Each structure stands twice: as C-alpha cells, then as structure tokens.
Image (cartoon, rainbow, N blue to C red; front, side, top):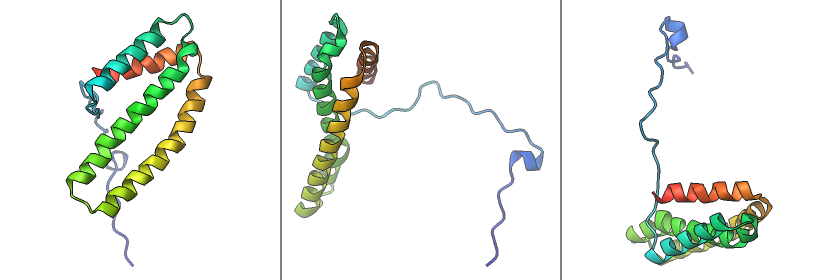
Length: 133
C-alpha cells in the first residue's frame, strides 16, 4: 500500500517557523453554580485564608472541592445529556457512572488535600477564587 507523503516541515522547506502568538487571554471553561454554593464557597475560602493554620481547615476545603466537582460534572455532562432527551436507562447509567467516578476522585482529593501544607492550601484557595472571576 503506498504511503501518503509527509507534510513538509519548516526545516525541510528552508522556512523558519513562525512564532506562536500568545493569546491575550487564555481560554477557559467555567460553569454556573447556585447562589447558595457561591456563598458557601466564599465562606470556606475566607475561613481557610483567614485561619492562623489553614491546614486545620483542610476538611472544609475538601468538602467544598468535592461539592464544586459534583456541581461541575452535573452541569457539563448530566444536564446536556438530559437536554438531548436521552432515554431513562442512558441517563441513569451516566448518573451511576459519574457517582462512581466522584467516589473514586473523592478519596484521592481527600488524601491530597489532607497532606498539603498551609502554603499549598492557600494556593488552592487562590485558584478557586480565580475560577470565580
């Protein structure tokens, strides 16, 4: 079987590659969350950031991260699936599958956040605040 020719590379053609222009703003994906979750998020972030020892608040931050993860998965995946009017079995399968993923991720997230030091936890809080802008 004949092979298709490889596309010419800048080195092979003698041209210099053009430098990639950095976009002014990096692309992002965000999701809308309830007012109640926003209030809770701000309260937890304020609590962790205001604590003398932020690591003492790691359980609160862990619960928040898990709730935000669940909310994001719901909005990015389950709501669009429901909007396509997928049948009940497909919707239930997706819901059960995501529940399993969340349980697995929950254990990993708990272990990671529990081992973070104060500086690292404050960095996580800062990232969450950036996502909220």
